[in-house]
Length: 324
Image (cartoon, rainbow, N blue to C red):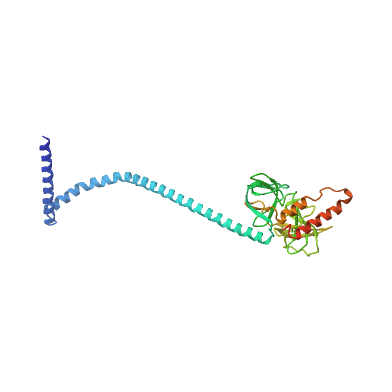
């Protein structure tokens, strides 16, 4: 029974194929006015309105389907463009970071070239926390005693002097900025032997003032002020000579000369800094040890001469290379 059904279907299929071939041969062989062409025209006349109606009815459906397809394509394109944007943004940030690091390295190299760093080992560190206020400004860095950092080590960046280490832990240290009221730096007018003490300006701690100037050099606006390498009773930290501190903005003459200075470093946007650690046994280390061994208390009657003697001894050490 099954084989008969299969044979009938095959016979029907063959018959239809043969009929199609005959009709196609007859269609293409007759003239345009032939019977098969007339049947085709009549069929199209009947079917065309139905086809037009179906197209009209299905047009909204096709539009909806096309809209969904366009939305999905647009979403995919948006996702692709966002990924491309994020990639380009990351590359730009990375390139800017590389450029900034290169500029910072070049600036630090220039500062180190202008200073006498014999006997010092610079240690790079990152600023990880800031605690600024009007009268007490410090930052924390991510390097400490395990890297050889000690109290009174000078801290600088590619612009100039940042401050001095005032507290140390194994893996961190606190740096008091040069605008901190407790910090005083022995400084000089660059290119001259004339030196004095730089401290935050009273009433305006974001600026500095150079006072007690030893020497008679003519100071003018725009002069560079850098570390002198001297030790004085007012500035006990041993900074090497030649680290930029700031630029002279004005000179005030009263009972004594007071020189206003704009800091070289933008202290409110610190990132990378360098700490000058001492190399054990080097001249700078021996000078500091010698200064630390000087008597710290004298009788009141001998205090002024003792201070002068200590300052003179320190200045002698510094000028001979011990202070940078």
